[in-house]
Image (cartoon, rainbow, N blue to C red; front, top):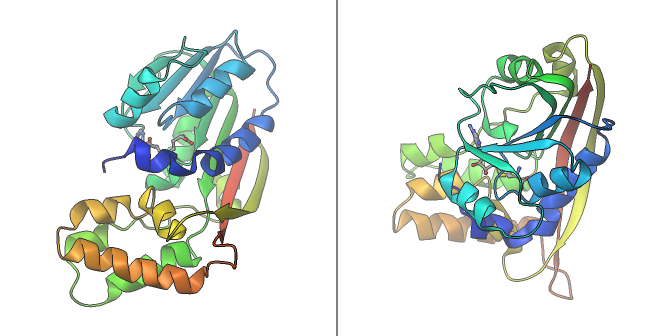
Length: 253
Ligand SMILES: C[S@@+](CC[C@H](N)C(=O)[O-])C[C@H]1O[C@@H](n2cnc3c(N)ncnc32)[C@H](O)[C@@H]1O
């Protein structure tokens, strides 16, 4: 799947806030090495470096477009290592104190194998945030539309599945670790026309749109936009409130 840094960064504040809240729950004073899995454009990776200036901070991502944007960002601090790799196959060759991952692992299959594997890399903390909004119209609307006849099979299978398990399952995947788990629903005020469509175009709809050519692409966008307007009606001042839930787990040795 191809990530677009410009589309993703349209709601940079709303997307960064859960990452900052996740970071605030990591009680490690002086880590030697901090790993950011699925670091994207690197804005949170830089915050990790600001929080722990003495640490070696390493961002890993499989999208060269996102990493190029991270490398281009000249804001301080810039002594961060960027690694172009796929988390599903990559392994660190160095010891790690904090493994951090914001809004990434819900794209990956089989958390029963993934979580023990990435937890085994850390000497102290694994901290993860993943969207938990599958039951909401953001995700149910495209799923329902793609269930209708007439869409290419490729588009149907490109829609992500809900890979985030119930909180209890992470207790099982991370045996022996002390867990701090919670879910937060953010009631986000979005501006502009069709802002919910714009929001999901930067995330859950990306792989679907990548597979669609015209006229399917325009028809799919129009269908989604109309249903999002109904599910998330604009308020009198033109803004739209989007409720979006996210699941957090901080696991400590
Ligand atoms: C929603 S963005 C989150 C970026 C960043 N963590 C943030 O919060 O701003 C998800 C990122 O995960 C990366 N990603 C998805 N699957 C990946 C994989 N298998 N290996 C490495 N990175 C992956 C994508 O390239 C993308 O940059």
